[in-house]
Length: 121
Image 1: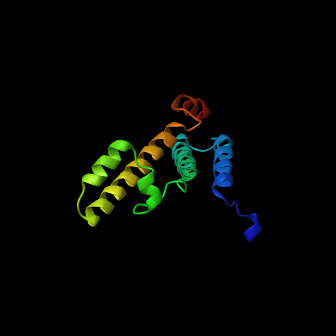
Image 2 (image 1 turned 120 degrees about the vertical axis):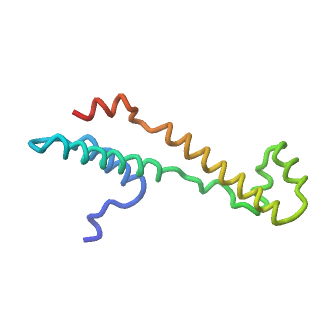
Image 3 (image 1 turned 90 degrees about the vertical axis):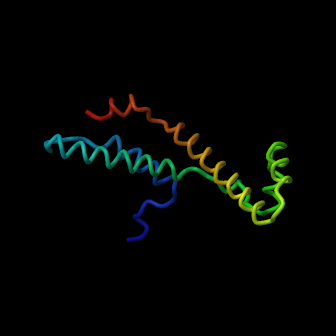
């Protein structure tokens, strides 16, 4: 049974993308159709967000992370005295970077709201 499953984030996104275009109302109630369409849309958006690759972002506390800091961030980092505060600052910067990448990636979704409304009927 296992070979028949869709595996890998790229394949899952492609599968959800194609399923979005294959959802049709048929003879079902319109109210039930709206729910099915929204579930398919949420699954597609979730699979799109899974495509974000943050493996190139170094872990906080490593030397590679401090080398990747900008000049302004490095000045603030050097002004911090304790090691715990330095690590907390690095973790905060990493979380901000990940949040910024997620926002940018979500904005690059190939189907706009207008196109989704055209797919809906």
